[in-house]
Image (cartoon, rainbow, N blue to C red; front, side):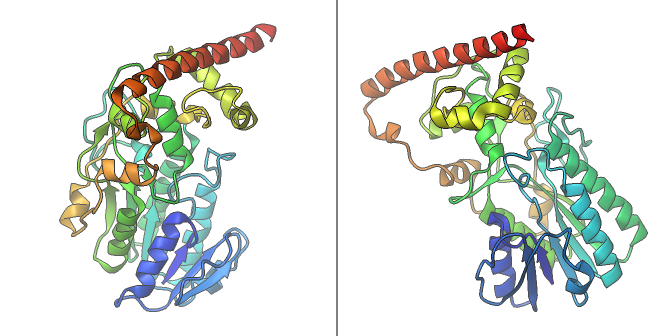
Length: 356
């Protein structure tokens, strides 16, 4: 079998589990990154768009597609524009090589975040990715292309996983960071949110490889927590309410100019260091939690709750070690400083727009 994207935070977990699994034979992994050094993994380094995929997949019965699995390639390319092209190349090579099972990673973000979303969403829910979120749009396109391919190859079993936002101790991606920052500017409203530990996502992939699953499966922990609870877990309890139109202009500008400004602390919006992807704003304002009953019925059991998964990716803040009086003093100072930062950012954007 083969794992495309074997060296990412999810790919390493999946590769280790498959190499150690008694039902899995030889595991071939390929990725842009250096060799992960996983014992038993036959590794090939290179860009998927440049590798000889037909040769790599010649003796492969199962292909796990984890390229750009849980977020875009980088913070600088938030749209995930390569997803559809990489998926096309992998499917064409799989077809030529006679691969019998394909496990593909999508995202629960393909459902979109809308005020009228049911809580929770199921696999039967309509896909309505937000147009401004290129990552979700491209994942929906990836699913559409895979669906067409499946119709042309009825003998191939395809499993599509739609995980909610995922993180782990060593990896907190831009989606989590953007949601966390945007929650500060969401007023006092409480939006249900889910966080999935990558260890649990890896077991879902493993089950998809060795089990008899076919079709689409949501991947999420039991229940959900509120956005306010998530902020409290990292010691940030004070929030502000910025009009959505102004917030969109500020965050669009900051996403483009923010890396330099955030590193120097010039623009302390959100958590003070993380720009907010404009495409994620509505995902912090409206619900998009999913139910994973179908996957549980197939035998999957998560080991982490949303709260535990979120905490795993964030070190315990010094905030939790202070007494309540000191926390109130610091919170007041933080609220004033944060408010001034938001106003400063809004004025800066306003001046730039006025000059234009």
